[in-house]
Image (cartoon, rainbow, N blue to C red):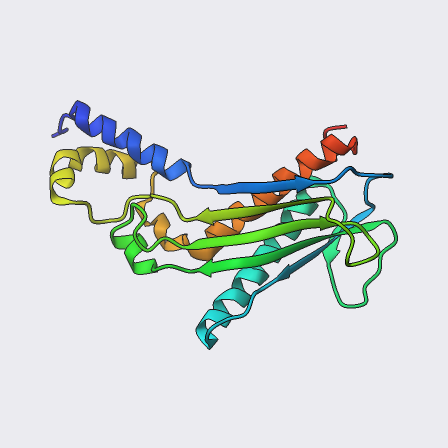
Length: 219
């Protein structure tokens, strides 16, 4: 027999949809200088980590750096921009360097994200991104900004008793409708890296347009 769904249940289902879709990276402290000359022929991507307090933290930071470098390369290629990982001694005429320094890497708690959710155990990734002109490492960045991303407020598998009793039908509907509460399993630094890479590409697109440079696919 089909159980009727209350207005409160529908409202909570809408809340679940909102929470599932509102995650992303925030950008702040944007500073840019005027671009001179033609657009860069290539972007060299460099992601560095900060000093770690212990071996576990160093492992998390290195993993986050590898993931973010991969995500940036993927998005740059998808956007139609020539790019390659930066390497010591690598010099490419007409290239710029996208330098990203990780300032905070916190994998959070996978178990808490899955079971509790709503921000418990959230992972967090913070970084400083700079687009540097070719040549001297001491040159002023063309644009620089901070990014901050976390795994958001998705619900877990266990809700507070009162909410669970009032919204059991809504949760059933939400899962049946495609909201996978166990997405928190896939959260962590992989999710924050994806959001960070997207935010960085968005800021590069804004800078390109402001500089009068064509962004592939929008000329």
